[in-house]
Amino acid sequence: MIELTPEDLKFKESTEFPDKKENILSAANILGMIDNNRTLSDIVKKYKSLVESLVFMLRWDNCSQGLSDYVCSRLIVFERERKTNQEISSWLRSIARKIELSPHDIKFKNSPNMPNKQQIKLAAQALENSTRQQTSDVEDVAGERRSSVGVLLVFMNVRDGEAHALSEHPGEAIRMSRQSGDKERENLGIATPELRELLSDYIVNRIRYFDGYERYSFKDVAQWLRLFLID
Image (cartoon, one colour):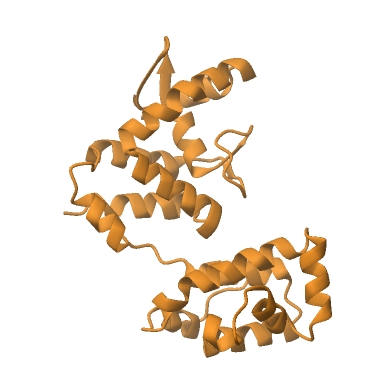
């Protein structure tokens, strides 16, 4: 893991950062796939450097245009230090990750569709207290591994064909997770719409985005949810 330096954090607060965030995430996604994708691996081998291969794959005119002079210079250093693609990808995600409400989040927060704050609080608590291993994809339920949405679904108190509020009782969640595969799929079919009703389509879809694209941790998602509780 590459730790963020004070200079990295300074870049995150710069006026240039907001315009580069999506490009940084795109680069992180590409690097995360290279080792398991023969086509991408062949492209990297063809070019003299990782930076040049990213410029080609993401169709930028140059690295500075896509990522900024600062990020490009850091990538060159990492390549010299023989950091792995996964290490660099993780660093790029750390640079891009900034837990705050976007303008769309703020608009939703002030809309009539904003869910009950108690449900958001319970969802944040469920994620903060989860001991599950976080999956690298967006699967809702997969054994001991969970996505953020998967954690929330496990904490749904599903019983007698009905889905109720998010449960504050870990014992109930454990009981649910031990049910048979067929029963779990049945409960998942009930719980997923109920989760969307409790937290809203908007928040559930945003959490899926954080899971699959920005790779927020459970605690990161919980921190984001808690921003909706601040008046």
